[in-house]
Amino acid sequence: MKSLRVLYHLVRADFLERTRRYSFLLVLAFAAYVAYGVFAGDIVVRLDTYRGVYNSAWAGSIMAWASTTFLSLVGFYIVKNAILRDEVTRVGQVLATTPMRRSFYTLAKMLSNFTVLAAMVAVLACGAIGLDLARAEQSQLELAKLLAPFVWLALPAMAMTAAAAVLFEALPILSGGVGNVIYFFAWGSSLGISIESRFCDWAGYNVLRRSMATALRAAYPSYNGGFFLTLNINPALHASQTFLWNGVDWTPPVILYRLLWVVIAAGIALLASLFFHRFDPAQERWWSKATEPSLAPANHLEEGPISPSDAPAWGGAGAPLSAITRKPRLGPVVVSELRLMLKGHRWWWYAAAALMFVTSLLAPSPAVRSTAAAIAWLWPVLVWSQMGVREARNATEPLIFSSESVLNRQLPALWMAGVTVALATGGGMGLNLLFNGDWRGLSAWIAGALFVPSFALALGVCTGTSKPFEALYTVLWYAGPMHHTPGLEFTGSAPTATSPVLYFVTAAILLAISYLGRRTRLAYP
Image (cartoon, rainbow, N blue to C red; front, side):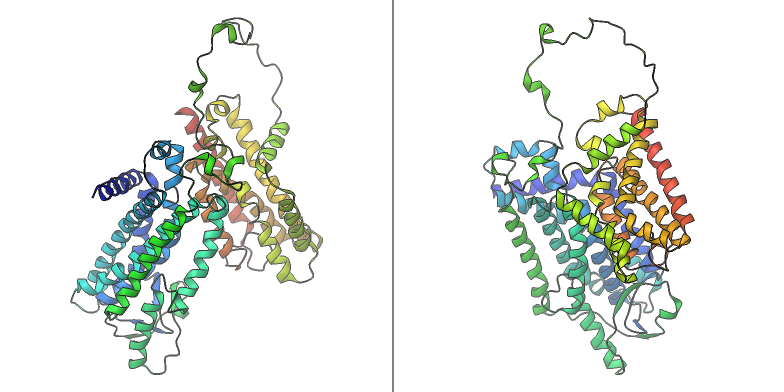
């Protein structure tokens, strides 16, 4: 009984702390926007050229599908800070002195993550009710059919997402930016498996697909099995026919199968406890973040007070500071920022970057060059994600922000260092476009080289953390350079390359946002 009470208070404290953050409100607003997209018909579920009649079962299912897809990705980055927050705030040091078991702690963190994600699911469930009332093609509101997909599909998927966040935090290799990038690809692959497989359907997609397909084949035997959750941006792909579907038959085997994923999520949380160091540096392995700078400021009070005799002689008390007579130079600051950004990378990191440079320059196949150019601008994602974040992460804000001309010298130097990384890693494609006289592609490539570090700097300055850039840029990179989506291709390596004017303007706007954000931070420390 005492353990349950402790578990309740741990989960409650975590939930209240997170729901008071602006990031939580921002995600709730975006969840409401997703609900509006389903309501407006911008996000649709389509089976070839068919869609279901808008009734309670259909409205609840497509909203639950959208919430599972959206929150299993974005929600991961929102809740993947439970252990880190305890470490930074030094609550973990207090917990380390208690008899609390590691398995109990990781399970509590998984449950606290789940409660946050479940609150977001509840917002989308309310949106499903509004969708059914506003767009219903059958007048009767059936709450059981509408809410069942959220209970049996979305919530188990959120439990899996919550457990994955704890496991990634507990594994030292995946706790940082590398894990943020890897999760995106793991998420995309697992969703594809969930749609096709009956045994690995953690998101519940196959449950919906089989039920809808069975109802559609009963009405239209010519249905050939196509199934899509897509943005409704192409009028030619609109569903032209409807069929009646009354929801999944929630039999006990189906419900038990969905509850099995909750048990698996709990097992993942218990697995994470094997790698959790329990805030004891002595238990950290060699691959841990021992070489990374501490995220918490050092407590200098532990060193004891400094006596007047130990104080360095700077010219006596009250000695006036000499005026700076020479103009500060920008070049050395750029070099220093670049060295800080690249610090800690091993030889193989540079070797891989050089390989992609040469491949994008000399490969005879355009497809190979394009792929190499795309990978070349994903490789430094963890270098760019430091921009605007390093001062908060290393607790050097008082030192950096009190320096002379920090806005007019340090911030431009930081941006120029990021642009230098973009030009160096992606230079193979730039030289190829130059040698072939592809001036439009070269302009798009230059615009991309300015846009990416500007994007990183703006997000770093405004959020103070590297996760938003690592997540958003990976999604943008996957849709644009890797899949050549029109409007998102910024490497200049494909015919779908976006007009460079758009990214030049966007880069300028992001730079202005960075400047204003840093200026506000200086004005209100």
